[in-house]
Length: 297
Image (cartoon, rainbow, N blue to C red; front, top):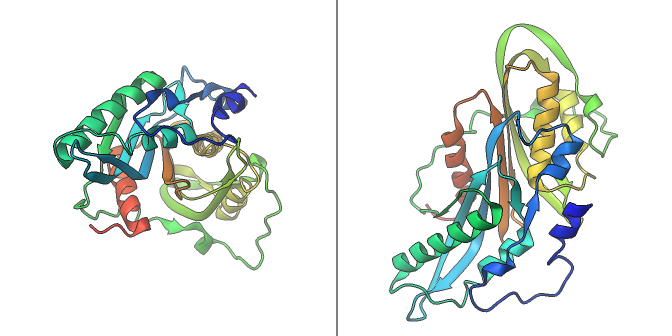
């Protein structure tokens, strides 16, 4: 597919990147191709949300050659036409490693922020927000009351036999009144559509509905991604679309995945409709960054 050709610009090729800042390394990939397969209209999205990236090994130099290292956060809207290809982003960020900017660490990071925001915004044709994470971030565990979905099923009798995305597995039942559901599944696995390397993550699902998605069917559905080949953003949108299809149109729904980093970068897509804790989720994604990798706060 055309998307795979674009995404493979750097993949599978030996590359030392650049020893100095080089914005030409960035590669953008259109979202539209995968969305078409799942009847997601790019011009009339059924969800809102963001793609959030964390680069754990960002480093640069001051004008005096002093190394500056920080965790970099990148965020842009899921309504953008493009995503950034992950290896191109890694090569681009690595091009800062020997680049000298600013008289001190604070000035260096400010100049890096401005350059990265400008380059990504131009490449992706959307507003991109870049920040360096503050190690003093407050602990607010937004997902603390999300229950592991495995606690709702009988592991001894549950049989998972589909390992390609199978929406027909999903089953619902009607309830008398609206009820909130807050579920997490810590064994989401899919594979990169270009390199075929496995990607692991935790998925968080919130919905408020008179329909109850039977937990055993939801577990089976999430397991069915195990042999799928998609980008992280695509997997979250696929899950969102399938759940939206079986719930009522006006029901509140959120799907967020916190993927384990690979190559020093992680991607945390977030999609929602009819809910209002967007900024809390953004905080949670930052907190997850610290908690998962033992960064002192």
